Picture 1 (tube, one colour):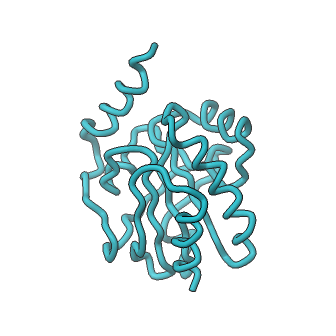
Picture 2 (cartoon, rainbow, N blue to C red; picture 1 turned 180 degrees about the vertical axis):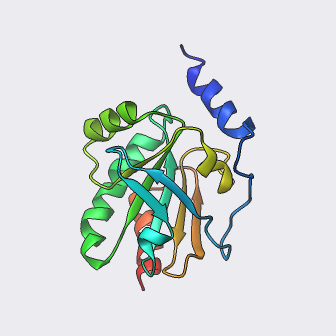
Length: 163
């Protein structure tokens, strides 16, 4: 059981699949995707968010850094939501039941999206969790954090994005 997180991380990194692995960095167009949220509602990027800046972050409940970071991000989300902040928490490799239970457990209110096959994560070139992309209203990546971010650094990226 202790090897499960390691195994899942290896799968995320090593899996092939229908989405090509990319290296998405600042200045790159954010790859389009379609999925469902934890409640089953279809979400399409960029169509559902045209003209709006947003944060796309990849996570899983077994990621030892994700829980604390997600709680910190929640604080920023609550402060900046009225200014237009949208966060999409894309879960890499887990099912709706697991995702919903975790989001409820930690008290996070921004939407969780499902990426059960990790195809979206691969299309963004995610090699470790958490990974966060700050995407402007035109769909261009303006910031990227690989690994855990504290509340202050996350908010700095958000404020720059919302300018």
